[in-house]
Amino acid sequence: MTALYRKYRPQTFDEVVGQEAVVRTLTNAIEQDRLRQAYLFSGPRGTGKTSLARILAKALNCERGPTTTPCGTCLSCVSIASGQSLDVIEMDAASQRGIDDVREIRERAILQPIARNKVYILDEAHQLTKDAFNALLKLIEEPPPHLVFVFCTTELDKMLATVRSRCQTFMFARPRLADLTKLLRRVADGEQMDVPDAALALVARGARGSFRDAVSTLDQLASATGGAITVQSVLQLLGAVEEEALFRLLDHVVDQDAAGALAFVEELADQGQDLARLVGDLLEHLRLLMLLQHLDELPEGVPVTDETRDRLRAQANQLGERQVIRLIDLLAVAIDDIRQGGDPRLPLELALVKVARPQADLSREALLLRLETLEARVAHGGTTAAAPAPAPRASSPARLAAVPAPAVTAAPAAPAVTGASGAPAVEEEDVEAPSAPPPPPAGAGPLDLATLQQLWRQAVLPAVGERSIPLGSVLSQARPVQLAEGRLVVEFPPSASFNRAIAEEPKNTAILVEAIHQVSGQRIGLAFAVSDPASAGDERGDDAHQHHGPMSEDELVLLLQETLDAHEVGDDN
Image (cartoon, rainbow, N blue to C red; front, side, top):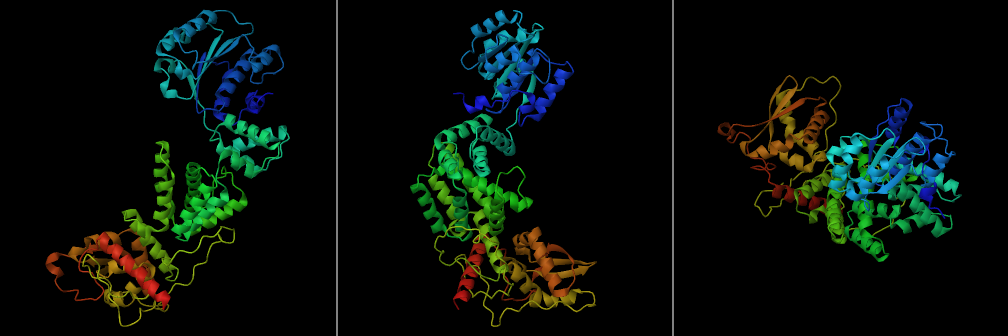
């Protein structure tokens, strides 16, 4: 019985899928009688290099040829398709790679063909020895008029440069998933297989851009299932991770449930799941989330159902951009360990814990993630997920629905805490934090510096704190010193250059601009400066809220922990 990948191998240029540029160039060359006598087809395995070489041979030797539409019924076309043509010689350079094999080619090449052209197809041509390549050079450069060479290789860089310079080179690209799925549907319909589109999409994705691997997998599935192929049977054969498992695993990350994530990995391992495949599939899932976060839509070529697309969009809204990118970076370490023969389990578990519980990670990236998470919590009403993790639960479309943000409320002041580094923290105030003042009435006059200086601590800094508590602490050391032509200069003391750098970040500058607009109803430009040490003195006075020096990373971590503790105390009360 003929294997499906051989039965459905393309027989004409029109049947070739995914190599439009190569087909267009070759057909134009045939129509314009501009054929070369040496071609080099390069590309990944299973992308159709040898099949297209055979089609080219049929186009040259067809009784109606040279033609771009070989008949497929004449003696020459039939013998080439069956591999029995005396004019088309296929050689495997992996086994016939020596100079003696090339000498045999040279002796036979001068013989006249039975049809029109004698075509040599050398597969895995990069494995020819250097002496064999050198023996071919003269024949490639000055061949008899009836001789055509087609070199096929998966490693172009190993081809001898002098041979490459004598060939017209074509680069074969990996086919798009949509092209692979279309081909698989044609094969499945031709073989009367009962298989849903979702199962074909999984087979296409598992083939990694190889037509031959995709059709061979479909052939194997048909034999195993009797032609009734399901998504579950594809997952079992490929060892792929079920889509639901990927959603559920990242749900634990959304919930900051490190224990639940570890328990679920243990459950998958007990089920016999290949954890190396889990890492790869999870990376692909995270890639789709990253695309949604930055493009708003998935590319058309991504083979997912409408339901999966909606669930991906909902999960992309629940996970922060920094969380997704951080997890991708950490899983890349697991991929490196796998390639070196390591066990993927530990790096996978470490990645999940570091993202689900960033306070367990002391790296700078984890610190930034914690700050961003805190800002998001404050923006959603000051709720915190730092309490004990919830019990694991399975994903569902309802579970993944986007959660509306509650109304923003003023953040309560944190109690006074002194960190291990001795840096003073935010002190407790005797009065409640002021709520944001109402917008100024319509027709209010222009904003002046004196008014803004008066509002700075009374209204502007509290409004900043509602959006970002750490930024509010950073700006508590600054003061407005100049307002001209709609541009405000905010000055920091000489020892706070680090804090000035934080305030100048575009995201933080935008927060301050919005806070001033909320208070004054006017949008103004911003500039930041550091005061002259000689004039710094005591002109700012003593303020219970200010830090007397730049905030180090340790102090930022301390501030973050104090704020989390304050929110937990407020929730308990």
